[in-house]
Image 1: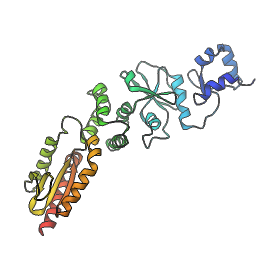
Image 2 (image 1 turned 90 degrees about the vertical axis):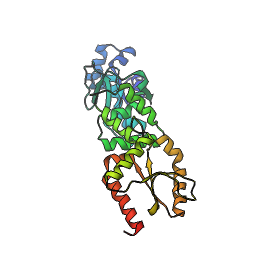
Image 3 (image 1 turned 180 degrees about the vertical axis):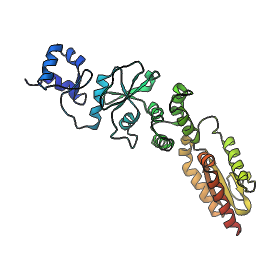
Image 4 (image 1 turned 135 degrees about the vertical axis):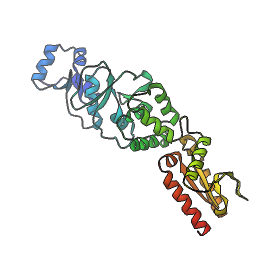
Length: 302
């Protein structure tokens, strides 16, 4: 028996898949559906889901769990792929459902939560998917710290979401003991958001790192003669300036060119400006001190 055009039209909008509920809505009884399964006109792929034809679009496979799992939403790496967050273009089907949901789906990674609100959902190409900010939070549960940090930077630099939007989701659903919470908080904090990211705290940490490393106490907020700029820290005898970059990306993007013009102006007067981030100070203090000491020695002929 030929496959009815109504099935094809419905399945074509859903990556080649259709659910038993949808077939019933089209007027087919359970016995009629079962006969078509036996005739290989419908191929079961999960709980109440059938494949009508094979769609070569990589996103097509996401429809099976969406149709077969109650209130499922594409999430984590699969959602990152839909949003265009590299490098998740061809990820395995991955969805989030309510914690009380019992069904599983073959070849699909299923996450169960109780805090996926309506504000964290959207639609892309007809598929329900977590928002970019919620997707990044969920990625914190499956990625290591370095890769998560790169994802955050890519998302913010591409203006897909702001650090403040990411922080808002963390504030809404992050909690002690929840997987990924501490990891994403650390990642956001090191990129200039959170309770210890102020310029004052960053300058204090930088100063302490240099002192603990055996370097002379730098001059804070130093204004080199003839230059209309103020350096966060400086060693005037060596004409070495230091800037503590907070990496608050929304301001950093706007000020990037200005900072580089300031650095070039300083170079014209014989000043070298080194820039260090919170991540440098927290995770690589020895390297920071080594570089500063090396420049001082070189410039003073030590």
